[in-house]
Image 1 (cartoon, rainbow, N blue to C red):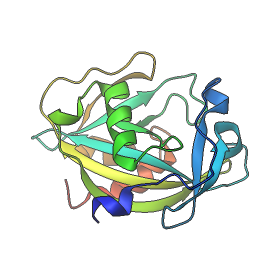
Image 2: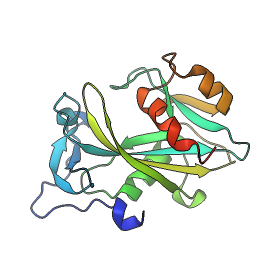
Image 3: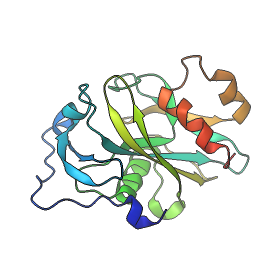
Image 4: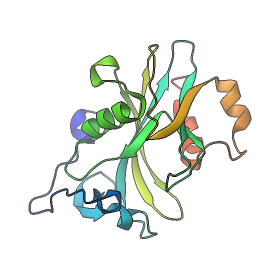
Length: 188
């Protein structure tokens, strides 16, 4: 997949992003190919309407094959207190996939874009009771120090593959992370 496949252009005549507060943050509503249809608020995206909106995930491996997972903060709207991908977040309206990935990675674990090389693994649709997301899944290998954000996460750590597999289905991880484990087989 090339960069054109993961860029979300703003449509002509669409509303501009205005962040009054987090609930009014604007996301693009997209079709299954990732084409922007219109803008929707965070509240619209998470209230059960199932309006498809894009997100990015980055799985961070170290050279020993361990996978870094973030511990979701207790105040998070979705899956509080569970373990999840190293970084993940919504693509803002008017933002490209790669710009959103760089922003989320820096916000959540402190990695500057020039310090890692993300590889796109897959794109899929995830649906829960309250939302439907077009997920862009990336992976990278990184052996430096990570600085988990105390305002975005409740910390994080590296897990071995065996440790992760032993905890699948035990309400330790987010359902979305458990779904993504299969896409990591070629990376592990």
